[in-house]
Image (tube, rainbow, N blue to C red; front, side):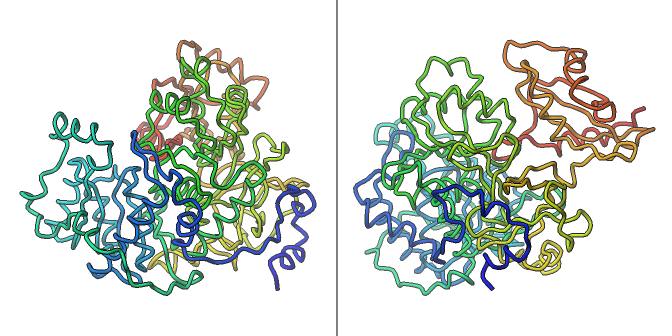
Length: 572
């Protein structure tokens, strides 16, 4: 049975008659090996800029040649079908080159967060069976890898030079004035297990082609955030990743031109959102990827004004920070056409304000590590709905299932667990068959998110199942409270969690960061909320903070606040 027939059978596919006119939900996508994305753009756009990094530019021809040389070097090191190679890198051209070279050599990429501790790295190295780690010669990175090598946790590491990524003058200046930031590889206790990147590329670039089965071969092990227990590695096949890129390109093609876009890369490439939505999408589009090592607000707003990106994937906190920057209204930010928001709910006030500032369409999308990640998106034809995560991507079925009984589909408009079926859904969790079985109901991936679908196939998230607050037996959803608090003009960021309460079991607590120069009291917030929330939903406590905790991609994080509150005595 085809996907379309399977959907029609369920009578739960209202999006089919309300889909964007320029997108065909039934479009046939070809399963491809990930390296073909780069090969296609190298063939078409060899002389076009592929990356811009701190003032240094590489063309698609440059990137293609580097990838071929690294591929041969990796094969000489023994990288073959299935070899796990880790990337412990900030955003930089080295990440792109080694990512595609590892896959071209037949290996599997394992993404690592550069902010991980040695203990976190050691767990992931062992869990993923990583054999080789790729990093830079910056002390902040290499010292952690050195510890893994000397402990015997990691067998080998490839170390690339950071200064060589910079323009000539900046490179010399870095070595002269910031040499203390560079590791001394030659005198390292682990020097015998280190291979310098210069030797990896010292060849003719004629690598041995590897046969890849896109539907079966694992391209990337992408670790989940681990907020609900031990982190797990989602096994993403070549087809998962390349079809998700094709889905995204089909969705945006009414506003994009191949070989003409500029994508701003401020989200970390090691995270699935940027890996697919910035790097793989940008490469497939033949776009120039403007790379930032990390998000710095002042640098970002200046770079937008100078480099004129046309596409910017981000998280709501980034859009909010740019919108509230002191220079936001004096700099020209109107080169932006599409801003894709993901990773967290997009407050309506942030969407409205950023669109007014830039003229771009800010569309909320939704996905998970397990879906490569794109699963839904708002249309780019003017029909985006505030508060919605949009409609299913082409070839993707969204089914809303009864919470606690995922075998039962619920009627349109009724909340339930969001379940996803599509060609971008992972193969499973690496070495964890039981966890894989628990995450699927038939062919559908259970997301753990509660939402509902309207009569046009737009999905609205109510909240995470695990974040739901049970207050005197009633279900209270933090996202709803957050949306209402965001409507207060002084609020820049807010996070709502459940805290222990002696009489009600749980009660909501709001943590608020105010906009620069703005003031508000607890009483001000309560008066603002009284006509907007029921008594049961009203926060029991409101706390103002200068900063709120965030995850590695910059979205607001609840777990640190929840840990703080768990350590306190029960209120009430």
